[in-house]
Length: 255
Image (cartoon, rainbow, N blue to C red; front, side, top):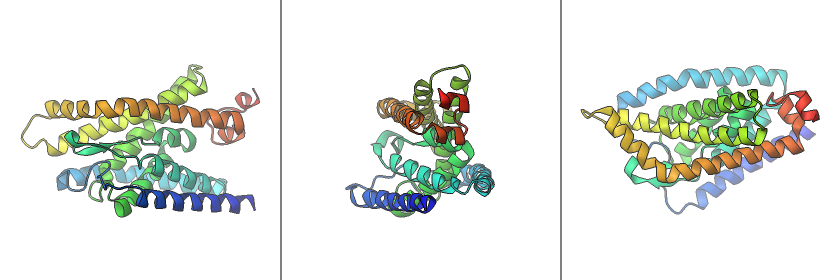
């Protein structure tokens, strides 16, 4: 009964998230890297890079959910979290894209980077199909920047800081911060590579990266605060879940 109740709540939350995103946006800005921004060869290149990571995520999800049946509803909830957090576009016209929080810091911490990539891929696909945010041709590039770079940056930052005994709130903050900034570093690389033509890569890369700073510097700090808040709340209210997801050890939960 509890499992069915959780699934129902996840489903309702997803529906409400999509409804709010569809009907509360007055402007249809292209989020992530817009459709048509990248030439076909670069769009294909990033898609080829993304495919094995998504396949790895599917494999991990199948493996873990066969051991624990409650794992899939948790992944569904994380997909909803990533979806709604990344549906806050702030246009950056000078970069040809939008700036926004990502949510991959918290998903990388809770479900691991590989499944976080899968979660991000699903969120990005729904946004591209129904919200005109991002695009299908640039789906692979967006998965690499937001899913791969964001998830691994958040996960590794958190793990390294916890390994050297940094407290969970600071570790969560830095994980969210670096997950966000890593995403926009990768996006700058993708944009500069795709649109440089005969120009030099580095000058264009720096121009795009600098164009993100006015919005992404404060947004990265905000995402760090959100990630720290979520992890700390779970630590105080449901440490057993963090133990189950191997975020903390049993002896830390007891403390």
